[in-house]
Length: 142
Length: 69
Image 1 (cartoon, each protein chain N blue to C red):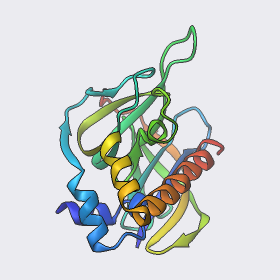
Image 2 (image 1 turned 180 degrees about the vertical axis):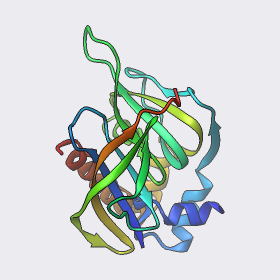
Image 3 (image 1 turned 30 degrees about the vertical axis):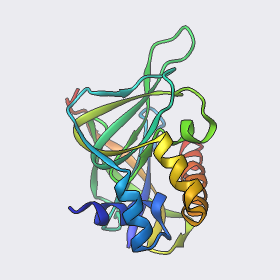
């Protein structure tokens, strides 16, 4: 599926017009992950967020003095690792590919530069990121 | 229309999942969440629609353990 069609199906980019989506497309880097690939580990610095085009990512949490456990599975159209781009904190969980998983990653620097250069994109992306985090909180509370 | 679905396992024993689907989930549909297969037993809207997106919660029950990992 062409990148533009994938981006249109991601809530993070809701409200962006074709030109704005093209700008997003310019900073997206495609990757294919095989089963078991660790995208990032809990405690790592946050340097990018990831959009899942197909496949699944397991989000696993390791409590202090405990064993890691799967907390959530994210599939098509979901965003992984966005918290770190907002608060600059370290990764709060480990993200692992389940099966072959196609992703697009957006580097922190590219994301911040785009949002600062085009504040209309910046507003829409931040609004959508907040709504995505809200949705995840509602999921967790159920 | 794109359906952003929060899949919640009914007993709370298994982690749920979130994904976008193009077809509205229906009771009786099967869905893979992580390494396991589940069946949908309830669907409800959890937020008002925005543009082309609808926001749903699907309650699921496990069908059988799978062996992806």
